[in-house]
Length: 202
Ligand SMILES: Cc1cc2nc3c(=O)[nH]c(=O)nc-3n(C[C@H](O)[C@H](O)[C@H](O)COP(=O)(O)O)c2cc1C
Image (cartoon, rainbow, N blue to C red; front, side, top):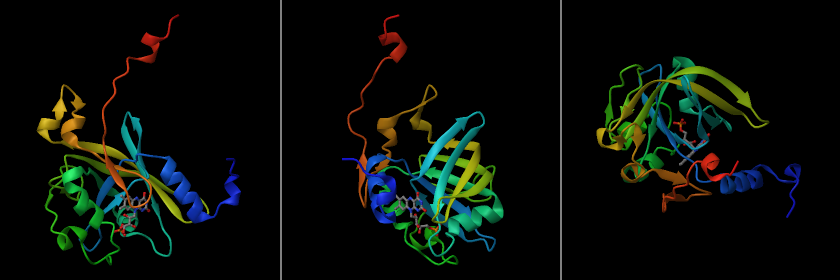
């Protein structure tokens, strides 16, 4: 099937892309409002950009109002990306509810937080991995109002048992994969491949 991109409407394009770009990791972002309200929300348009310095990005669609996360980060320049795992699935998912800015998701859903070391927004205490980030830049993209946030990670929190000789133990981490629509998945069987250069004959 050949599908010219301009033949699809917003919804059709969203369904096609979020069904094809799978599985997506989830940034469960905590941020702090100028009034001191701790906000938490998940974003799966999220990826690594660089390791020197450690840099990540995520995107927030604006629709008819600026998301609380977007406003807080724009005004404070700081946020924490918490990596949720399977035991935190329901709490993370609940944080996508559209609460008013004066209501904290962490208070409403009883999610414990812990102080961050380098930024003011707290991290989620039970999250196995957290990136404390300073905003480097944010910019609009697309015809719909989307905003891309690029952050430099200033500090990593990693649960002790997950960190094995500098690598994250995926079986212990139990990451959540976001797939199309209202669906999540867990990691399946892991498959090891030698480096391609070692497999290709000169
Ligand atoms: C798993 C998951 C991933 C999401 N990814 C995104 C995303 O990449 N971009 C976005 O704008 N909204 C995304 N959302 C929706 C936001 O979480 C939702 O709009 C939330 O209410 C924003 O909260 P806030 O206004 O407190 O910032 C996602 C929701 C879920 C459940």
